[in-house]
Picture (cartoon, protein in one colour):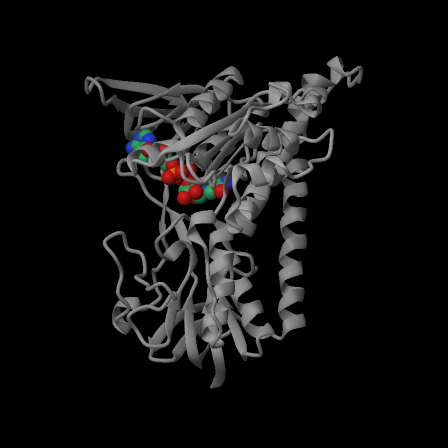
Amino acid sequence: MAEYDVIFIGGGPGGYVGAIRAAQLGLKTACVEGRGALGGTCLNVGCIPSKALLHASELVHEAEGNFAEMGIVAKSVSVDLAKMHAYKGGVINSNVTGIEFLFKKNKVDWLKGWGRIAGPGEVVVQGETEGAHKAKAIVIATGSEPASLPGVEVDEERVVTSTGALDLAKVPKKLVVIGAGVIGLELGSVWKRLGAEVTVVEYLDQITPGMDLEICKKFQQILKKQGLDFVMGAAVQSVEKLKTKLKVHYKLRKDDSAHEIDADVVLVATGRRPFTAGLGLEGAGVALDEKGRVKTDAHWRTNMDGVYAIGDVIAGPMLAHKAEDEGYAVAEVIAGKHGHVNYGVIPGVIYTSPEVATVGLTEEQLKEQGRKYKVGKFPFMANGRAKAHFATEGFAKVLADAETDRVLGVHVIGPMAGDLIHEYCVAMEFGASAEDVARTCHAHPTFSEAMREAALACGDGAIHA
Ligand code: NAI
């Protein structure tokens, strides 16, 4: 029986980052992962493959549209889907091997198999390698899985979750997406650009619930212009599988009227739930909350001595980078240091085109809290670089405290929004005011000037709008 200082169960962004950090801090560390590849959902069937398809399909769209405008003659643009999937596979593989290399470099043992907490300080692994291991600390980092929808049976061929939607062998003629959240809109955009007719059926009256409302509205307007259809306020009841097609049955919430819509492929993207099956939590006595998440305190400790939990399996946004930060911090806590995550400054990004990025509080949250705030906005239409890139849709919006000028929230829809948001993440970490950002020199011509102009707009006014 091997004895470790810490065993991470789960090799996704939370578990593998935590394991590397723990090893760097001198702890004898192992990471249990049964998938056959490190990197978790994010790397194998989530963030990374979707970004490859988003990038490739954006280029197709660009070639079909703006190339001609820029004087580039690409007479026939066509898609070899099998090759596109192979490119995506290559991106996954090179990242997976990268993590294996980092494990070796940092002397983290990869225990290949599925882990179960057998008792205090004991993890039993079953799979490619089998055995019981002792650990002073155990970290549950088992992530999440797609939530199921009553009346909808997923087969990952015609009725798919994000996993199947990343691997469709041919472009569907009609794709119906259930749920206008992050997954539905990112993957809906991919298949729309590759030629599918896409209809998104959403239960609520707005897309991407929880985001700044002004951004949501602009986002939906842009997606509609790109050809995505939306059925809003509609609760999906069932998906009927016929021989040649699927029928999605839904009821409109406003009048309870029943409707149906045909599809070749249906993507179920109605959220994810914590993945705890087979972990033996009940037997071990690890407490869950009412949503099936592992309960933790502010230092990621569960109710069981020596057992911690991080990432999608606990409360908070289900985001790879949130899990990474928790992995890093929990390793420090276990090593006797002061690991910390600032939950007020966790960016959220939707990798559509244009991208949507957000950090901090929304205008609606500020109103709810009765806070006095000012708003500075700047449209990408007035940004020189954006014009040269045909990327003028969208705007940056900065919310700052009315009295202190401290930045409270930033919401962007526009080119490279997912990268641009980070100057404000850093600014907010340092407790910056909008004026601090406005007085920081930004290179010209860059998209980031729009971010500075939005900060200027919180004060005396933007220059270019
Ligand atoms: P989500 O929670 O973002 O959106 C689900 C949507 O489905 C909601 O708008 C909800 O109102 C709707 N819905 C639920 N039941 C419905 C029904 N019966 N009929 C119609 N609509 C219904 O969930 P999603 O998109 O599945 O993503 C899951 C998780 O993965 C999220 O936490 C997300 O943050 C994360 N993720 C993050 C990414 C990123 O950061 N870029 C990319 C992909 C996933």
